[in-house]
Amino acid sequence: MFQSIELLPADPILGLMATYRSDTNPKKIDLGIGVYKDETGATPVMTSVKKAEDLILQSQMTKSYIGPTGAAGYNKTVAELIFGTSLMENLGNRRVTVQSPGGCGGLRLAAEFIKKANPDATIWVSNPTWANHVPLLVSAGLKIESYPYYDYNCHSVCFDEMICCLKKVEKGDIVLLHGCCHNPCGADLNQEQWRQVRDVTLEQGFTVFIDLAYQGLGDGLEEDTFGTRLMAESLPELIVVSSCSKNFGLYRERTGAISVICDSDTTATIATTQIAAAARAMYSMPPDHGAAIVELILNDPDLRTEWDAELTQMRDRINGLRVQLVSKIQEIGINEDFSFIQRERGMFSFLGVNVEQVQRLVNDYSIYLVNSSRINVAGINNDNLEYLATSLAEVLAS
Ligand code: LMR
Image (cartoon, rainbow, N blue to C red; front, side, top):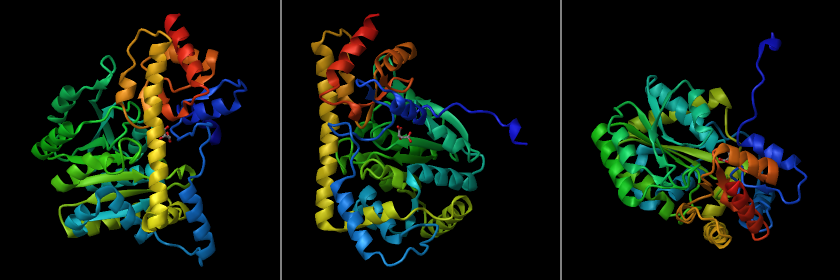
């Protein structure tokens, strides 16, 4: 029976990670998968995380099951980080949060939940969107459409086209937005644009679903929630999926959450039972370790201060690298305008080169980036900046 199954190509992002690891070129640069890297190219465990892990190891008395919805303390703390304490109070029991195995687990739970709420729902994703959004949502049986989001020629959000498209989305459908640090393009909505999207949502009656995977890596922990909080305070319903992979560096610990805001406390209680049942049917319950770390850090004033400082350092490094890359490109005499990279936020930007040029960077220069020309800005450092810019110049010139 098994002979009939097809060989699948490697995942576009994860496959690149494996190829990079096997490349022996000492000049190789990894601008592929979205993991934070420090100046030495390492992805270290954050000091606050190490300290929390030590405390957990010393104090943990049991490894007994917690349950499909995860740890109540983690759920509350993570919701406070996203929504802030006063909005949390206002939302009361209309808001529920369920721990998930990473952001991906949260997205899949959201898809299962949407499927139960409206089996005919279409999810509208941005064009472009993160490569794994579509497989995650389609595998739950949902239909996908896309709305215009990024103008590759102007290197910015094509907001008029986006709004024009959203004005045709109907009640019962879902619009997936990136809360901050858009993956893959790095171009975010500004505050006025978020307000306009909110207004169209209210007019049309569709449901907004926010993927918040990079809180704290754009402009700041609070700043990066502007759109999410605006939607949460204005809309009767909202889904937010969040991740602690990037802002706590907990990638492999699979630590995320789904928060759902409903129009009433009763609906929110029912929603929790649906999400818990979906979790139970897929993986029973989420892993505990990463969530225990996050809960401890966010509730311990010293650890929280330390984590905040570490996160600020990461964010400042990425934003600094954006500026450095743009000035290096200018310095070595590339004529094209790359200043958009400086205006974008989060780990990613498109370099704006075509697939053949990407392939040349990968094959001839060992500079790894996905075919869309998305780069992980955090993969740049003082040692590789010159090589990156000169290789880019050569590829553009040929
Ligand atoms: C990325 O976009 O590179 C990250 O979110 C990692 C992943 O799982 O794709």
